[in-house]
Amino acid sequence: MRAIFALEDGSVFIGSHFGATGTEVGEACFNTSMTGYQEVLTDPSYSGQIVTMTYPLIGNYGINPEDNESAGAQVSGFVVAELAKVHSNWRATEALGPWLERQGVIGIEGVDTRKIAKHLRSAGAMRACLTTELTPEEAVEAARKAPSMEGCNIVDKIGSHPMTPEEVDALVTEGEMPPVEYDIVAFDFGIKYNILRQLRENGFRVTVVPAHTTAEEVLAMKPDGVFLSNGPGDPATLTDIHREVAALIGKVPMFGICLGHQIISHALGAKTFKLKFGHRGANHPVKDLRTGKISITSQNHGFAVDPDTVPDDVEITLMNLNDNTVEGIAHKTLPVFSVQYHPEAAPGPRDPQYLFRDFKEMIASGKGKAAR
Image (cartoon, rainbow, N blue to C red; front, top):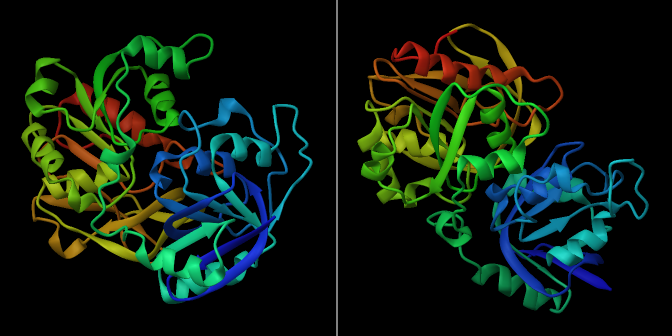
């Protein structure tokens, strides 16, 4: 069956369908990772996006339920150059194509993904349509009518999934875990399973709460720390969450990742802006401005913190070496810090996972900055 991938500027790519059928719209973006397609597909931060994978062969190691980052596929559509029809991995339970069909996600193969990525890098992220039903002209028009990612609150659309510590343990742990040292509350804006796993492996007992939980409700739980998760959409739209997080800052140690980083930044008085085409891949170099250390990081975000709006009492701690955007902040006197990238994703070496230890040491020390 023929499939069409159309962009709002009139660009049209025609290929072969796999996965589900129908029509979907979303923001077109690309990911440069060589592996990890299943983690991309199931990451809630990709909700509302049609993802193009630039690596030429996708699906070669199949699908394994243990590698999901959420309960199922989250993307609006999936674009690849070539779909592997046969997979080779002893952990796999099924092929990518049939899994996407069951998940209701439309896929297209046989298109020039390098051309798509180069076009989005040049022209910027834009609205798109992926369809097995429409004509090229109709698909372009559907893309133009799709909502813009800028100004879009997707956190509320995907919903939150509160979990007790026992439910978290049942979900992410295997075998013997480290003893619990601290109780924390984790806000779910679209939290990845591996973040929960890393928190648990670092000795945290985790209670997951909905995105719109109030500061009063959190403080009533008497946590040792608060964690703010990743998630999709425009962080500037979450004004009520900014307010509740601001009410928590200084009262309990806090750590945020990705959208959580952006929310903390807003709560501290900074602003965010939309990147031209976003950061999505597993090879982004980030420099720690305090130590000079370089980490190779996994990233997935279309918005970034404006460095010119970061208040004087907040330190910019990490910087992206590709475009000098803000990758981390820490308050100079209060126990709160955050990072833009994904330290739990382990793109090869596990460079940035010290951040989870920093969070634990911050709680233990009661000092205003993460310990080293």
